[in-house]
Length: 83
Image (cartoon, rainbow, N blue to C red; front, side):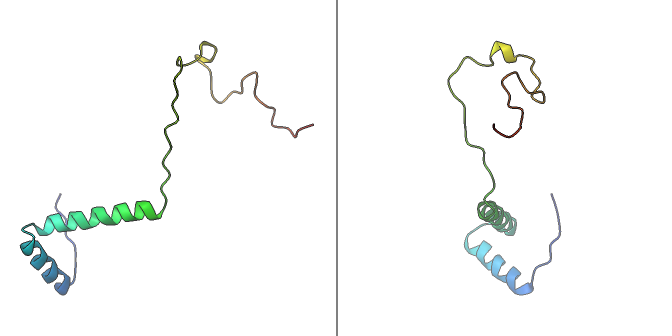
């Protein structure tokens, strides 16, 4: 995708020299920099990742087939305070 960005003349000159030295393109450097910022911010914000919690089993229990998660089952607590 093509887009337009405004950066300072000094920064552009530095990036062009870097691209020439590394035999790469301005586009590649910009993409690399943006990906690095995204990765750093994802780490800094502590983005939640659900751990793998699978286990060996026989799949869905037959008594739960077609069950509605919004309706409490027979063993559900009433939500009241303990006696």
